[in-house]
Length: 191
Image: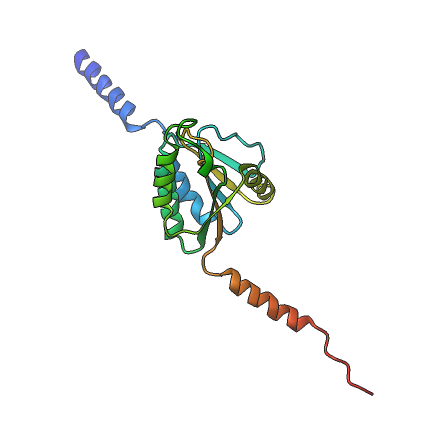
């Protein structure tokens, strides 16, 4: 009888140990999926190399993905493209075309691969410090999600500013023009 209780006790202990799995950290893909519906125009998603600095602005959230940069770019763009509310406005560092393989092995291969991945998107470029200044300013009011990758080539970050998918810049200009026209004072009649 005593053996029976010992065996039952061990079985219960083992079943409890496996019944409550340890809580695992949220993977970066789940975070992107959870955050995407909350993000809107003027928010940013940055897919950055491993040396990108941890920014101290309260609007900046940094996540270490421990993933390949091209995989992260591909996933984030897929998530944006499947959303109903935002579209990507992509900027890359103006320095990247000038990074040579003898200084940063793999730079030319990366340029080809990111060029293929971003084919069909309008991609702007700005000097790195200017992009960082734009993001710093935006983070004072808007959320910036930074996804750090294993990339070890400088000036390879992909900066995505989100814009409204269902309202174009042209529609906004037409709206503002109509509003301005409606606010002009009526001409006074001649007496």
